[in-house]
Length: 218
Image (cartoon, rainbow, N blue to C red; front, side):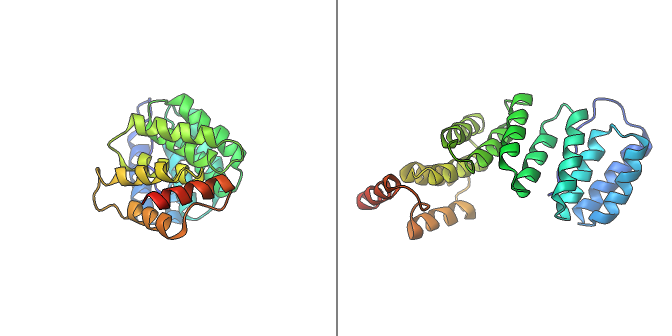
């Protein structure tokens, strides 16, 4: 999971700047071990460098080392005003199946940058996994769509959340909205095809009834 390093508020020294660029290029080439070697030297010189710690987290994600990615992302978050490290920490906690903690981290990202649609998307993706928090997940997805109505991802996530809630018509509407932005979007086609073939996720009788009604109207 390659992430762009946040801009540091302080002026970096040329050596650190060059090292960060080298590490970014190594991550793009999926040479994560080499990237970590470069970044370890950077954080030894400056242990409060959020850009370096963000890239450390990216490199560990690339190696599927989620506990290490979490530590690096949370370190970056302590020294950055950007919400990207918090989103990375959220993703790491999800990968570690620590969903309650992931929800708390996602909420921190929203508080830090409430106008960034990516934070609300991440929050929705986490909350939908937690029992009893579906209404919050739907609200977060709706906020993301409101902030970025011309971006594909909020509509896709809104559809996935509505599908998980058993709101079949709302899910289909969200997926179809993607085509007004990207007419050939494969993810939306796949979601609609899956919805047509398999119906809603297993759940309550109410969900099954909504699906039956939706199918009869189609």
